[in-house]
Image 1 (cartoon, rainbow, N blue to C red):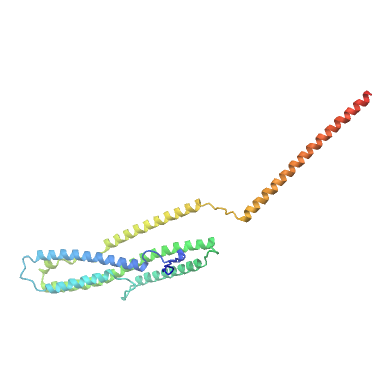
Image 2 (image 1 turned 90 degrees about the vertical axis):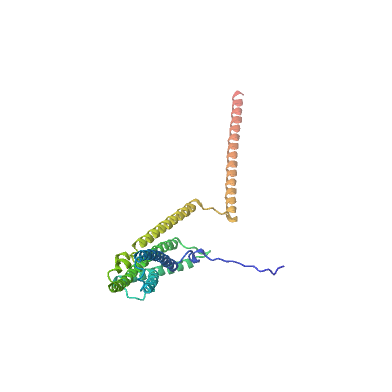
Length: 305
């Protein structure tokens, strides 16, 4: 007894706590994983369709089976290249960028610098707040303005990140597609015109056409942003209603109660004095009237006498 262990959990100010939810880097990695999953599913579907096409095309050519091992190796290498392409991020990309891509990269860097500066300013303002010295109205307005600006800049950075990544992927995919087309052309020339039925036309290879998936991702992202904005406005309205309904309550202290008692006693004493003065005045009037009556009576008696 008396030697039990105790655990105390202490939390600081809410504004100094880390932001809840996924960070921007974690969201970027999650998008890369989702893109990889979509690429894998697309590649698997196309591979299955290609295999079915090959089975149909080689039904009457079962004696021609040479070269299949090379095709399997090429499919595996293409799948690996597609996965690397889906996970590509401009921050880790070591290849050369075009002039337009370099400008986009510099814009993203400048916006990130603005975000860091705004967060540093907000941290400095929040550090001045304490129980004895609350923040002023201007400081609270500055914090709210910085928070809104940071949210807007982060959304712009995410959009710019996605646009730059898509541009780099398109550039890399274009070069890889051109090299693959040259290899396939040389192999077709070596095999003859009958290989057209076996491998299909170059126009059938639409693996690098990701416009539909990119549009779908942008649509989902816009829906999420709209829902988050609506939720934020709802919280703001609820907070303003609570602040409006919360009327300031005056706290009575011993000093205020004593002052009220003193004022009430003074008012009561003044009322008593006024009442006494009125009574004395009324009494004086009555005495004077009685004296006048006796004086008139004496005059009348003398006149009769």
